[in-house]
View 1 (cartoon, rainbow, N blue to C red):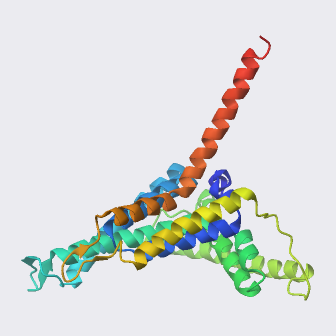
View 2 (view 1 turned 30 degrees about the vertical axis):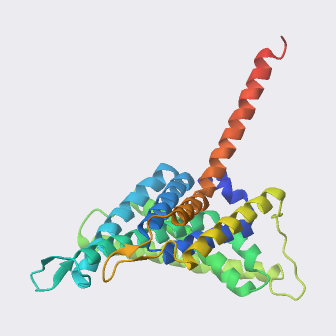
View 3 (view 1 turned 135 degrees about the vertical axis):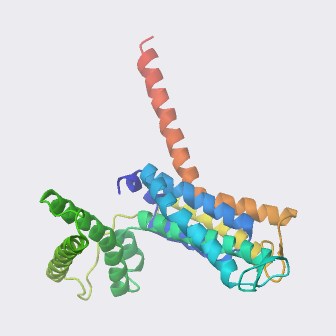
Length: 308
């Protein structure tokens, strides 16, 4: 949470945030072009590290590498389509180049989408979700916001209870059944806490008049000039990429043979615009750092030479 507060893009209006994530997550799931997959993967990897620091980098590598390998290996083992036969498996089925390339593509797509949702969860907190969808679907927005908030809190509480149990001498060390008893004890405690917290939340919402007709909610979000500029940027660049996709500028096929758009002026322009769209939060953060560094240098200069 601390890293998220330092993120420049997270301080923008929730409408700008949600449109950005709709664009990048939608394109990440729709595009199979290797260049687009590479752009999206690099963009979300850098942004997730910016949001979560070196701890985020470590977690990314922990789940990304096994997931990439597993997905890339499973596809050629079960899919035998393609015209370029490399060899034959012990089962007699052919191992094709197209199935290997598609497996690698699917692996990067899966990891990229997961990483984008991690960034989404860091930027779009429960208050923003409630602000965006509270008027149109109040109950759905409440469920989404509570779920997004409950999952990290549940995990944090689980760690707290386990550390307390470990300090009391009930850690994971020991025999198999002792580990099971410890896990059940920790899980039972956390579930009890969750149920009690749900009751307290329901009573609190009822006392504050949630669901009453005519009730209004306080909002801290204001749509400013910088939000408007960023929104126009997203709409223009996202629209350009979408138009290019509809016109087939980034189309790519793996079966029956590898083919697709990888060159051409229009195709390259779509790649460039897509990269500028994906990397927008990182540009905003670097620009903010540069601005503050410039202000700091000016203040230091005035402090040193102001009296001369």
